[in-house]
Amino acid sequence: MKKKIQIVVGIIIGVGLLGLLFRQSDWRAVLAALRTVSPAWVVLSILVVAPVAYTRTMRWAYIIRSSQWVPLRPIFSASQIGFLAIIVLPARLGEIVRVLVLGKLAKIPFSKCVAASALDRVSDFVSLLVVIVVTLLAYRPTTDVRLPAHLLHLNNDIIISVNAIRYGELTIAATVLGMGAVLVGVFLRPKLVLRMSDLCMGIVSKRLAKSVHTFIQHFVDGLSILKSPGDMAKALFFSLATWGCYLLGITVVMAAFGVDFPWYAPFFVEVCVAAMISMPLAPGGVGQFHVGVVGALKIVLPEMDVAVAFAISLVAHVINLIPVVGFGLFCLFWEQFGLIELSRESEKSKAILATPQAPEESSGRL
Image 1 (cartoon, rainbow, N blue to C red):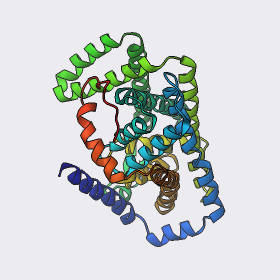
Image 2 (image 1 turned 90 degrees about the vertical axis):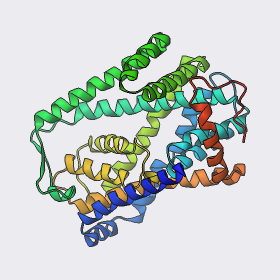
Image 3 (image 1 turned 180 degrees about the horizontal axis):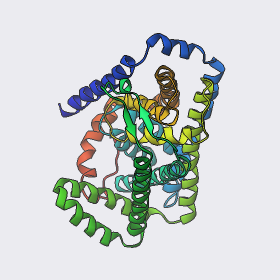
Image 4 (image 1 turned 90 degrees about the horizontal axis):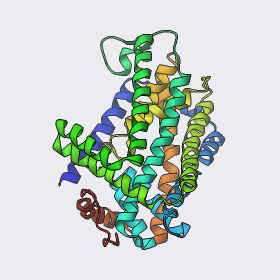
């Protein structure tokens, strides 16, 4: 029942966000903007984004193979099925699905699969930090940013001063450095970081403290399987390549609409989208993705028509989903899995993931 409620709430939020954007846009202008895009541009953008299926697989492969050799096929299948589940299932169950599929296909203990998944998420996060740093260094507005009132259905325009933006950049930069310091601390003194985390988070909420403790513990377990720093460096390379594909993809989409934009605009868009979809609300990031793209474009390019920005968000979203859905469905058929069955199994595995340390004897088999 709880999962059904999450799905319904997520769909309502996604549809509501899309409805808000539609309400602020002239749908005829959106259709007119879509008609200006040549199919060749769409094909090119898909070809640019499609390699993420390979780069994500290789990123995870170097982490997994650091401790033991595993054929590429189970890693590829688990990765693609997992990311398909992430956009379909609520509450990030796709991460658990990815772990379960890897454990079944590669015969790896469940705890080791969880650790490898945690390290994979860390490598992805580190690459996102690089994108954020580039964005902070490049985006330097000289005048106040004005968001039109009709964009958010307000009575007055929202004015963001240059000073507020600079303070915001400093805050984000400090946060990024703090996160980096935490990662280094976990690497050097994991027990100390766990004690400090329990103390600080416990002031806010015992439940939050337990969740943060579990996440850090999984990361620590992940470090224990990492036998070669060179493999982690290669994983980070493919993680950066993944973000590079997405950056190039949004660049191609914006160029397809004939938009004249500064080179850092795709970086700003990707950061905003990442922030919007960080909370697993609507399936597939519907609504959240589009608000992130439209909001970012209106900040970087204030003169851009909302209809054009909305059209760009629609095309970019579809292009990002095509490889995930295509490869995910192919791997489901290839490995003869059912997404509903995997969803049920992932619900059962939540209890294992909720413990600070998953038991080694659990195989993660379906």
